[in-house]
Length: 230
Image 1 (tube, rainbow, N blue to C red):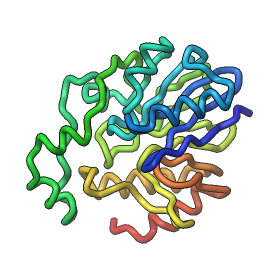
Image 2: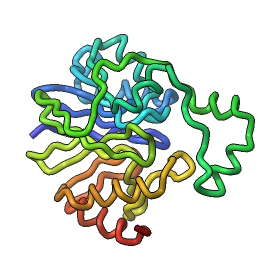
Image 3: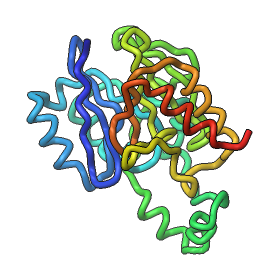
Image 4: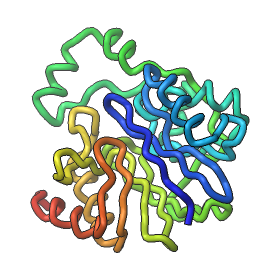
């Protein structure tokens, strides 16, 4: 089974997967570029060794080093089809949502401040992924997980019962939770996506924020999802 190495930045995770193919899931914030490169080097990996860079959603803490790594590695960049225009720079990142008080407060700030904070370098997307697509060489199936961003995806390794979940789930202080609501667009779609993860019989989930979830990851997510309104 391929080895999954968690690379934790100040606020977000990305994951190096090393085996028959070597690839990254997400790329962390722009400020974590040096830490990411040190982690790759410690694992004996150079950017040119990466066959793919897979992006779970377009936010800057997942795409912050994408353009530079793409240029250096020539790796195939894959992301959800509905998030691809944001990654390419064709659409600006969404402003904070109105779903909670924090988001409503942030929306009153000058938009230029928000855009500056969220900035990442645009990057071509080679594969615009949709529900049910399969990356056969990596043994991954694409799972649509909307709610946080429109094109948010999970990447399911069904054979090994593990899944890269992006920000749909978080795991802090031993507690499973959901995504940052002020950076999301739909509570109902988040709840539906979480219930879907709960039904998947996944042993380990790799979240965008916090520690790895597992064993019995789907059961842990199901416990949290049961507290959400239908």
